[in-house]
Image (cartoon, rainbow, N blue to C red; front, side, top):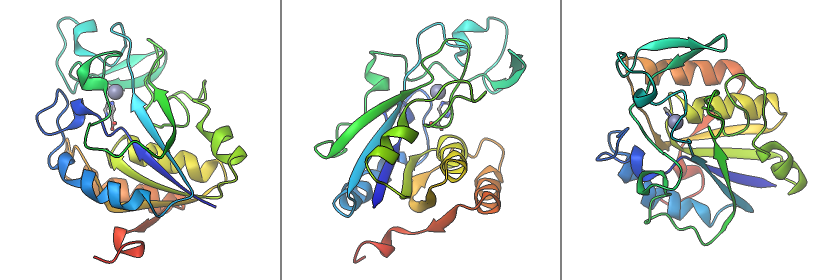
Length: 206
Ligand code: VGL
Ligand code: ZN
């Protein structure tokens, strides 16, 4: 059975948002068309408490995009984004949410960031997505959303590790490309991990 996982399609990742991703708004209509092609549809939501370790406001004197080490893990400092309960944390209104079986929060522990929608960056905690998909009978996982160089990439690599047949629908994703080449490297890393890269025309008449 095929499951679509829509990663972090939230206001703060839209082009005008706090952690704006170029063209992020452009993938929403495409994802809305894809939703009808899947047996199960879920979404993830980056959802940080205001004392979260990834937020610049908790690192006085540091700059956005600097790396620090927290609990032995390398942590990039991001602009304040996706703080629980805020407008920026909400899924974008234009996303068709009528068929979402569940929304999984990630990055909710103040001391651990979570790029993957399966596990935090230290692999200490599960969001429950793995068990949910398994119990729903999914064996093929298709990912789309934001961002290809962080959350989609780490989610896809974890999906393979969880034993799912894993696909990334590339034209239904956008990336940050913080260091030029990150997008390209993300694809190389995913393919090396066993992720298959496809495009939306596999499902849609384009
Ligand atoms: C993300 C950076 C920080 C993402 C989330 O969704 O890719 N990136 N938090
Ligand atoms: Zn985040």
